[in-house]
Each structure stands twice: as C-alpha cells, then as structure tokens.
Length: 351
Image (cartoon, rainbow, N blue to C red):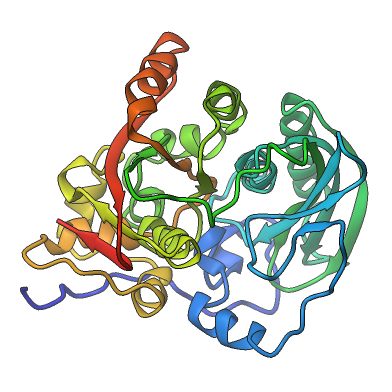
C-alpha cells in the first residue's frame, strides 16, 4: 500500500466571542456533523463496564447497542427512542437545522420504525442573533413534519460552540425491528445513499449535492424496504461505511465483504480523497474498524472511512430478495446500490 497522503484539515479552535456580522456557524466549531462523534473505540471501551438495565420489555438497549433503544408497550407496539446532535457543518442556519433533524430522525427509520414526536436539543452562543436560532428551529420543524412527526419542545443552553439535534420517539411493531445483529451468511449488502459527505464539505466540493443527500430522509427507503423483511439494517453516519459494517459483522458474528469498486460516491469525493482531503473522523474510524484491504486504492479506503452525516441505510437481506428490492427502489425512483455480501467468518474485507 502507498504511504497515506497528507491530511488537509479544517479544524480550528473555538473563538470565545462572536462577531454578529462576520461570524459563520462553522467558524465557531472544532468539527461539525457526525465527524464530531466521540471515538467509537473509546466509546466501546467506556461502555464495557456499564451494566445494562435488565427489563423484560427493553427489546433493544446497550446489550448490544443499536441505532436506537426500543421498549415494548404491548404485543402490537414498541417505542423507538433516540437522541442525536452535533455542531454545524454548514453556515446556513436553516440548512444546519434541516440536516441535524434528518440525521436524528433517520435513526428511527433505521430500526424499522416511524417517528412520532421530537424535542430539540440546542446549545448556542448568547451573542448570536436570535434570527439564527429561529432559522435552525423552523427548518428542523419542517423536516420533523415531513417525517410525519411533531416537534413539541426542547431545551436550549448557552455554549461557545453551537450544537443542535433532536431526541426522537417513534413506534415499531415488536416483530418488525431491524437490528444490526441479524446479518446472515448468504445475504446481499446494499446501500441507499452515496458516500463522501465529509470529504466533499472538507474539500469545498459540490456542497449542494451533499446537502441534498444530507437532507433526504430515509423514510421512503424504509417504506420500500419494509415488505422485504431485511435481516439487518443500520444507517451510515459518523463511523463511516466501514465502521458501521464492522458493527454489523461483529454483532452478527459474520464476515462482511465489500466490493470497493461498487461503493457509490458523491461527485468529486474520490478525487478529493486522492488529493489528500480527510476529516477528523477518518483516523478514529480506522482505529475502530480495521479492514482487510490488500491492493485497494487509498482514496477508496478514505471513502469507506469517511464520516457521513445523515447517510443512507446499509441493508443485509437474503441474496434471492436483492434483485426484487433493487427493482422496487427503481420503480419508486430511489437510489440503491449492491455493494457486497455476507459470509461465514469474522471482520470486514474490502476488495
């Protein structure tokens, strides 16, 4: 493998004061979007000593952790509960609010559920004009309504670094939960959005295309997928494709093979990776999820490790259902790409 290219980073210290006219949202952050996630490797170590609650009706909790918690109410209904927030990754307040809301809502869709209610979690410098906060909240409210849910309140504190997100409650049938831990040998692996949002934003690429995908709810994809009863599903966010594939492989006790050439990318993302653009999430994701990748170009590895924000669904389902699923997505004018397979064994292989 060639030496890693130099890293181009946009990281910066957080200023203590805010100029009302000149400050941009991203100028107030160290790192934005899902790239701001705590290291998955450190989080895994931290939670090792945490004893999960034992409750008969807690269907999904920390053992193992998933995209959201699920609590059974009765034989027909279970609550899906998640929380997700992060610093800005774009300067436009409305766009930031819409992306943050999409990212949180998508956790419910990744569990097979439907959002019902959301609460805002917000932290902003007091010096910022209230119009900035109002634009964030209004755009988030629009996106929550588009998901079929209601934004019913929240909590806002003062902080030098802006942050926004949602706590979301949804519902799912207890027998219709999509876990990370269900992938089986013989499954096909499919992805419902292209990769590269972190690379494109860090490298000043086609941000309009990246924003379109980051504000696309996974609702339509989940609706198309539901009749096919997938074995495992997760959404691709801060740990990148390889990090989330690693979680699926480890919890399902299988080996995942990803076809590097089949990984879909946003326009310009691979070229930016080839030029050395990386986000802060890249080294943390490599530490968390080493992959077998002899002979794979470094820019494709960078694409697989790129921290995504509001990414697509990673789907594992029986291979004999894959063609029909792809046809259904095409009929609904939805994006889908087969990117690999599930095998006996362990770990993630890329080739």
